[in-house]
Image 1 (cartoon, rainbow, N blue to C red):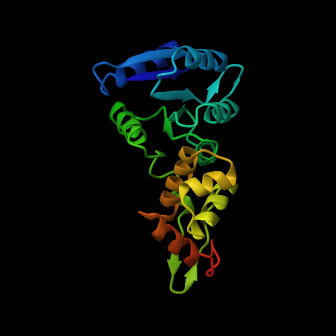
Image 2: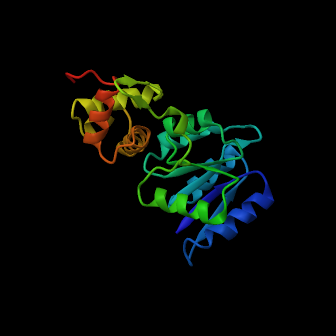
Image 3: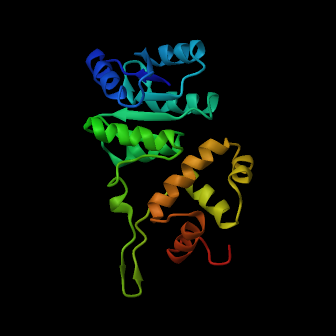
Length: 212
């Protein structure tokens, strides 16, 4: 297994490398400190299985780099690492193609659990990230507090039409892997365990028209 760790702080990279040893005995870690180095390392190491990308590196637009890498390597899981725990940063990272968002305040065990979820094909964000966006009900009153990104709204609309991930990907000009990331994020936001439940909940909350 090979992981690319991109962070401009040497001590942080060393700490991450020690943590990653819990993932696999034969783990190989490739390092980068800038966006240009990330691209160069990926060119040299096309067999990288996972990228851990610091959101804020000098002379690097973290979100721009994420979007570029997601387009160039649509099947490569990229997890954002950041000291920021702002929900807007987490939402934007997922919307721009990240498979997960790990705050640097996480413990080793939390980080490993998050990475394992991503490696198993899931999408990871801290459990309380979207807590403020959950819909709450009081009798017949429904509070529409769920806030989807524009891309998530597009994906949800196509889910409501019964489209497959491949069909959604073709419709939006994205990879199936990216669509899977968005679908997983939508399920988490709606508290659903599958696509059907997500569509039903979205209709109930008025996020989809009932006749879709």
